[in-house]
Length: 209
Image 1 (cartoon, rainbow, N blue to C red):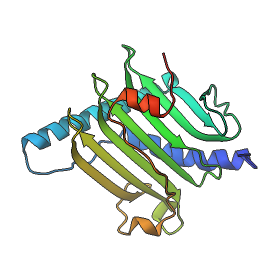
Image 2: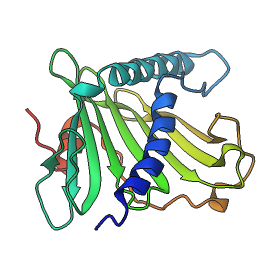
Image 3: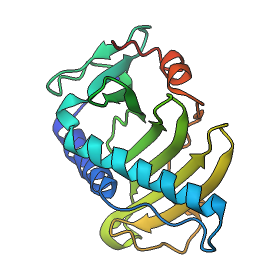
Image 4: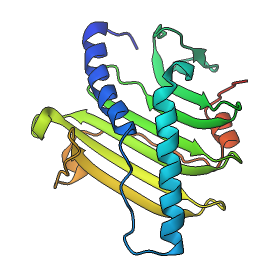
């Protein structure tokens, strides 16, 4: 795709991206209220996800950024925001201080900048997926602040069995929107959730050392 007006796209996309980044530092919602072993495990996974989000926020310069270009099989390494033409998807990969991959994010590329989507995988010390999140943000004048956000969180145990699924529909201030998601212009993208870091890397054709 060819960007007709890069400045307009950049400013609109930046607004949605900033909203998403701000959410990283906020605690995740509580899924279950009654105390139980399942709740205890879920609480621990929520805290682990929040810890990785904070690490991502503090180490943004260390994130490996890759682009999927239309018609090309290999991903393109992106440096200094120098995006290639015809970008279809972007990928973020972050390793911790030991070199272990702890987060992979996939983001479909919006040419218009009217929406932002992020699929994020969180991996434990064994490389297993313990959490997945989806964030979608769109401009909508009918919502307070002009922005609607839909969030989905899924948490998994060590056997990749889902413990909880949490969904939210809010405005930019994270105030609940009491309307059906279908009333908004959220783009419909198909996505998969991969059980571990290796299957995620293979599916996205990501090669990092």
